Image 1 (cartoon, one colour):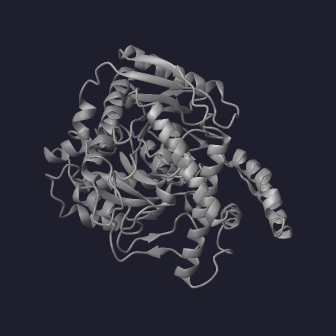
Image 2: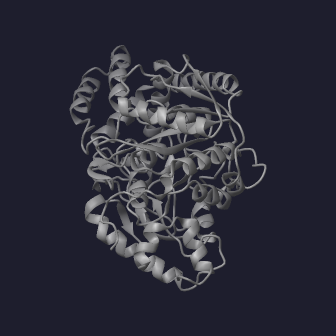
Image 3: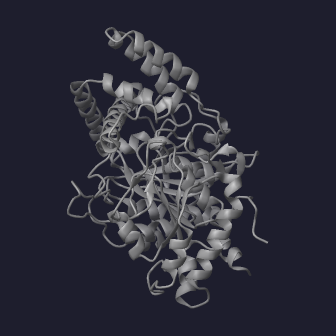
Length: 498
């Protein structure tokens, strides 16, 4: 078996085991990953910055006893820093080049991971499809006419294409879970405060954003979380410590769990038959695992909740644009895409008082949600309302041009038109996915599981949301469902190694 076949067949845990046993070298793995990256690059367009020579250099001194020694890895081109590596944030704004490593990067390197590239993101992570003016369209290895999701779509494409077995990702409104659902991967959105974002920021988007990874297997996601979780001195808060290790949780039988299923759209928008089929498949797998299932409704997770979410994201984007202008010493409005500029303008319209009031409303709903679902070990719900969309299917420029023109000409009356226009924008932006923002607001962990492939050959995953701080139960349940389904052995049919 060639090294490229080994890379294709094994997850990160398996590859690290081969390195420890001396059956393969870090140099061989990294060279195979680089070859795979270049072979698939024209198909998926998922690399922002190649780090090939630095990766090869790193393999020469790596300690093969490290937990993930020599395993090829990718860092997202957003929200994380590696010394000397340009971070673009998917934007044409001049790149930020750090003279330090993020705490997460330090932990990745200490685990033995070898970054071979940074992965593409839509501009500032604002779209759930990875398409940008700066880097073009990132495509799904299952079908390159379709999206790999966003905003961690580059990470998902690299893992699904067999370039790397696991990749860094972040999630502020579904940006780990949506790409996982689109590409047949495991995507764990961690509890708020589980992993640090420092020193770039102490929190992002008012605490909505978390970092972790996209992975081929549940055990990889669990092991990587063991190696990266925990606060640092600059973290403003921390998730409760686990009772044991996350890897041990993923390896044990979950016992008999009490699960709930939530099927409705918080926005009242259409849900495809394929999404509901995927949810039914997940329910069947859970029942096969011996768990009880109860159908529930969450009527307070509604359009007002989603509107408040969108408004605070818009306010955060406006603040980010101000910070970027300060960093580069000039206005950046001409550098960013129209959609980003529009979101920033909405953020400037929302007053500080309304932003605070919106946050308080979201916190109140979160307290109710956490209290009322505490009786369940996890709640199953969709991630994407439709199978992975065709590339370019959500190009918003027409609507953006209309709304931007109205905003320019009606400054004084802008609050009169704000609500209906914002509703239009919200429906357009969230038509593809209605659910993931719930857990970003509540701070709960949630894991996307690959459970279904459409007749057209496109994956559709679902998510299981857990109690705050309880990734262990989710990982145990997810590993059981993975084993029953046999999904972990499946691979995207893209340029399979000879």
